[in-house]
Image (cartoon, rainbow over all chains, first blue to last red; front, side, top):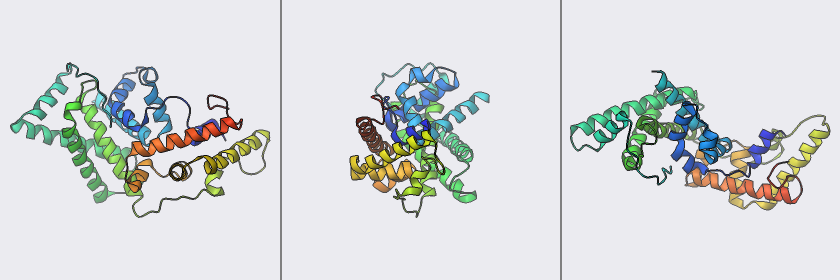
Length: 73
Length: 216
């Protein structure tokens, strides 16, 4: 069992924002990430949640793709 | 979604300010803004559906129907929550968030329509976390840890926590699908999962499998 499996099974003890707060912050998070800012420092609990929640991570990936696409146009 | 209680910031972004002005208008400007916004939401839903390559293997009319529903539901949510937009991001980014959420929920739920939530926690569902075949010393340690986790699932979790853990972690049931079946929200299901994982970590720390910060 590797570290990724362990995280998938047990999560971590680090602060986790939960889905509601993560989704609430996702627009700010996505823009900060696309702008190259340090999202781990700006939104540590959200970053941790995205590592633990596949659904929210997928939504994050989708929003980041849309924001990047918008910047290119 | 929890938009927080940050104070309203002056909107420095003219485009965002224009969106808010038009959507709050009481005349024809509002209708035009709603139509334009819906088109943006529909495009966002379609792009996101394409990016996910539709795990339910939806295509054609069915997929377009879900995108249309997602755009409609996103538009309703946005107009209801308009006063919660604080200007900390661009309005379009904030709005896209709703479209992404709606299409993602609909795609996941569609993939599980008519399917029973798998609750099996027999050997095959645990095997992906452990080694198979001839095992080295490290692998034996991993097998021991996995056994400890399995015992902790039986001993430490409430029935609800066990159901959610087994479904979401062992059987890869999407959390939105679980939320719908349980008649609750994604956030509430995640909280149950979070609490279950914490209970497991505490048991493994007590039994000496994990250090005090939940690491080996």
